[in-house]
Image (tube, rainbow, N blue to C red; front, side):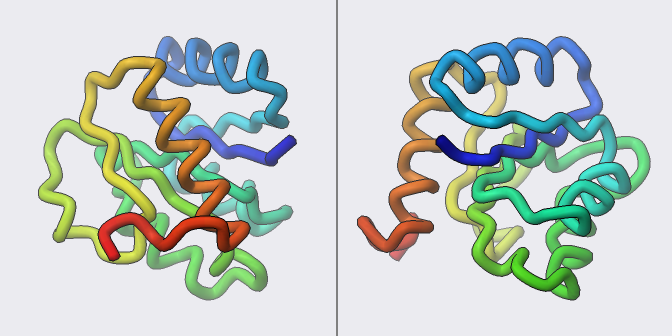
Length: 126
């Protein structure tokens, strides 16, 4: 199915989300920091990125800014997972997924992001 990058500094979250998305048939990669996320994107941009906003090295906003210079990364749909952000504070994301979230909400966000990437539905918020 799709290549999905999970970016979160909490190993419990990355483990659970990885299992859930792998069971859906997706190819999952994990980055445990913002800098590791940028390295992963440079090696091959994912179709969808589930991005934590608050991490110890750089923020999700810094990751988004760094992705702008990566060829092919403009097509990556970003689902921003956070408990601290007003959705308008980080333009360019497909959806903000408030933490803590339910698996059903995660599945819906990923499915919607993939559909938007493929042009099947308009961007969230439009």
